[in-house]
Length: 262
Image (cartoon, rainbow, N blue to C red; front, side, top):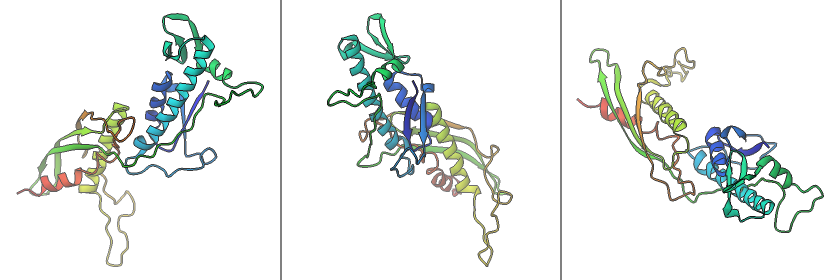
């Protein structure tokens, strides 16, 4: 059986992981489809560090609904209590009775009655649609610090050390989060020190291509030493805080503070 989870964000692997954790399958068995207007009739896109907070929690709620469907159907199939079942490796098993197991694919076939005999109060299939709309946003907090060396003749700035201590609530995927912070800091360094739009007296842009527009490269972006703490947010079921901008925003003020000292 192929599990389809629909979302409108770019953090596909994190979304797949949320589903996999709920229904007990390998994350590679979860297919995430996004941005297909043939499939989605409503959506506002991702912005302001809301992908995981909004879409992630919506996916989580839908996955919980599917999990409940799985347990309810499997309990009827095995004639046991839902509490006696476990979901693992794409199967539903009766705890302590290893021979009583059914694959989710087979259960999904049973969830689609051949003659349209759907029980009152139930819906066919192992699928669900859900939404999540937080009353307020939940954004990350943290501290950035760096040591810089300024050449007094050229005024060139070299970052010797950069440290981030970061709290975005529950961490879904540490590797993706690490990349978000690293990329955010790189973007912040560019915004603060390298990138500038230059115009002549007639308002003509002078550096409209990357041949003339200065971007930081791997030579200018230092290794980022990052530490993560987890303080779950009370504003959503997953306890997530948006992390998309937490790497970039503090860099500018940090540059001002460090490079303006005598």
